Length: 502
Image (cartoon, rainbow, N blue to C red; front, side, top):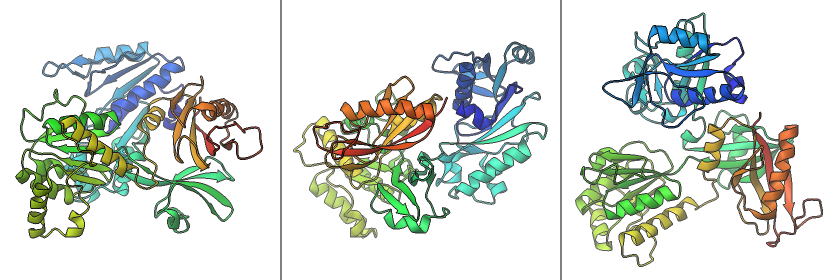
């Protein structure tokens, strides 16, 4: 399987240790699942501590329950460890702690790598990129000293690379094989331009940034994506992909609650902020990814990435002003503030007196939401989310499709990724829409249903068999075997590529 190939696994490897930060446990379980599928008797354990798994796996997870925290497992005894090494084909060991952070370098007593480890995976996450070091790093003082940066420095890709290099070359014992693993590679960058080669090497995909050899030729097209572009003798499908949208709600009242529910419903990552404990309640906001009980300035000053949507619905205009000022100083895609025209005008006047320009304030959606004469908290929330959806779809950037990308990331099985790369006339879905086709013909996501989708599923089976990516056109506006008699009268070009092989 691809993941096992990536880490360099072979039958001689008995013990695999994982160190670093930013996805050790998830990576450990994914590797264990792959090993289980190829018939290996595998077990997971720790030399430090891990959370008890919340779901059942087809392999055991062994640890000693912690007295002060029953949700965590600590290291097993030496005798138990020696026993499982004899009884199991492969032992996976989480050998480092990082307190949920994205990057780390160890203190002198870390990591706790078993002496009989054959392979050590050194892990860091792209989740640290473009964020202050102190917000994403465990052992910040060690990392800042080794990288020669301050705790307030914004983490660059070169910093993450240096952390991985130090772990592989200095932390892992010389007698063990070290492999760097970078998790959350693309989508944590907030917004990326990708180019997928259509000809001559169909399916080759890369990120286009200042370091790419074709950057200067391709950047002229960045303002009008996605589209097919020809450079010299090569043809590319060029697109802009954003990270999952973040909805940050300042205020845990009735409108905040209704908005959080709708935001989660449409697939946004939801954060709720309120200084009042009774409103910043995790049970009240069970649908939210994060609930922060702190003042608005503190909560809104955090880095939420470039695809952040801020909704200000606090308990009073003095808090609205504090919240809006914090948002304006942050990175955001959308900022909206609830209130009457009179109240929002009052807040804007105060911010102008503080030096904020009218051009910046004019971009704030205030009063917030589409004008649908909303009255109840639920109706107001609908108007807010509708306006956010309008903003999301403003322009032709391809939104991240959490179901599709998450499925590819979490499942190590044969599958084909189908992407609409061009269309002519009317079609159910737009350029950039994606769908995963599994080996059994089931799908994740949709490119519009009907005859086109059925034909893509059939062709995906052939792609899995021959392993070659291909662009296929479906529709009625041309002569050919794929003329489907689409009622809409349109045609679409679909890129079919191997997302993962067996």
